[in-house]
Length: 510
Image (tube, rainbow, N blue to C red; front, top):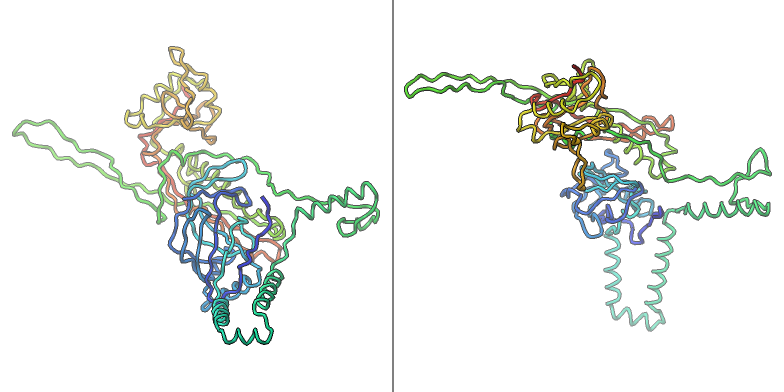
């Protein structure tokens, strides 16, 4: 896929400020390999029109947003009468300096693959006018102009005026030829207003061809090759910048997939709970009844904050088309990993005040002794499984790390059958004693005194509350004197065990 920017010929100056365009084309990936499926957009009725994703530069509003077979079609208007910046943006569109559209959104559901992601659900927050869109096909398709419309009306009136046409014919003036000349001049002017686009591929090809010719003949092409300043006879080989980013592998526990995840608009959630039941007794026909006083209590889950910032060279931001997307991806992976660690082992001791509560650090969870300090027992897993009430047992999930799972795969029951059962059907999980297994790398290893295995009904017992999803705010001003751009990232989330009785730990002890 080429990175060449396509400038539409119909992009003209606008007096009315009305804009239509394709904010995201379906079927083709963007510069970082992401594809958004049709039906993924939440289709808001109206959105702010920003310039370059800067929330301080609201230049208009998008009134109509709809999915079409081609992509996300939008129609909006620049607030040219109210906002000075909107008039400047109109001038940049008129000059051909900007022509792209770019969307700002929060991903709700996506499938990662080798070259990027396939996004199936998202929340659209804003649509910006930009010079270089993330998707090359996201372009402004037309800008309605009051002046151009009035000129067309005048031309129509001129053509309908038979007396003027007759006079022109009598004097030898050819109206059709004159209109053709005007059309050619308009095209030449529009072409001259287009921003210069450097074809990096053709430039690289000419440099490489000139370098090969130098190696074969010794002739130096001064325009295509770079000559060393301290040694005029030495020619530097052409530089090549790859568009691929080499990423390190980031793994994190999939606790969100099995827990009860909800949204909240508060900094603290109070959960009333019952700590006792009524005390009914069998009585005779005329015997006195006894009163019951069930006891109640409440627990709270506080929202915690995870934050950082990243400084990036302005030159790198300008020279690499997808470095900003890579920064956002790296932040998302880092936040996902830190969040997952907290869901397992967070909120204990000194970290209790700033981290969500992990299910491994919650109090009141029952423990089943393995019967040996270091050797995992198959009988202990069976005891742990049936020690849980049947209602929760039938909805329970095993959680352990890969090292523990490798040991369990070798365990057998008294009849010689493996406790671990592989999945022979696509989309179905592996099971132990008929219940699914989730591999969480943050769980402890098998060791004396450790609790390497958790069994529980996570939907009923572990609650996650999202207050603010991953928010990345670019700051292009405060670090500019150092040649840097700063990206601030934050996330607010709370979590905790709300039912300790639906969990059970296996403890490596006699």
